[in-house]
Amino acid sequence: MIKVAIVEDNNTLRQSLANLIDHSEGMHCVSLLPNLLNVISELGKTKPDVLLMDIGLPNISGIEGVRTVKDNFNDIEVLMFTVFEDDNKIFEAIKAGASGYILKKSPPEEIIEAIRTLYYGGAPMTASIARKVIASFQQSPIHPKEEFQLTTRENEILHSLIDGLSYKKLAEKYFISISTIRTHIHHIYEKLHVNSKAEAVAKILRSKT
Figure (cartoon, rainbow, N blue to C red):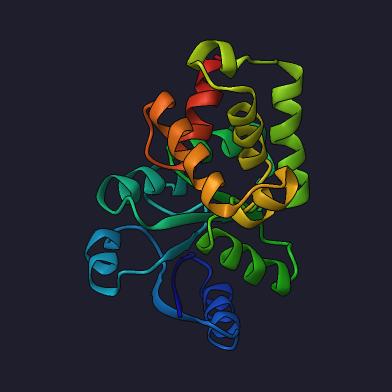
């Protein structure tokens, strides 16, 4: 059972998301919050696997909230849920530790699929958001193989992670086992001195600035 927490200040939307999650096979909403004021104590009690969080929250922004959550609960995967398609907000959320980014206008089935993808090791992004991230890399090319001593295959896998592929999809794409994918990703994390895919993406983004 995938345990999901929601931080959303719109009462109607927050309850609709909870109902959607509770009526989806294999997942359950364990926490509903209108803001981030009590997020640490609440997450400590409910221990969700995935946190679905708005960026435009009152008092404390969602981006700052990601940093707070990841500092205290590194094993909770954060999925940003927002109306914003602004490049800076996308990159700031990723740098802060978010592992996925989906727009509020996404249909219900895409929201549920994004939660599942995140839980099973992927980095889900709405197609328009993924295109912005990829375009950013294409416009300002980087060379992580040279900077971080990644092998050609590690470099390929790193950029496929950025594109949102799960371990299973990576294995299918490169015709290798999921175990081998895990080994490659472990080596990538070691060379980048990070502990998660979100930190890896953030480090690559920072290397461009």
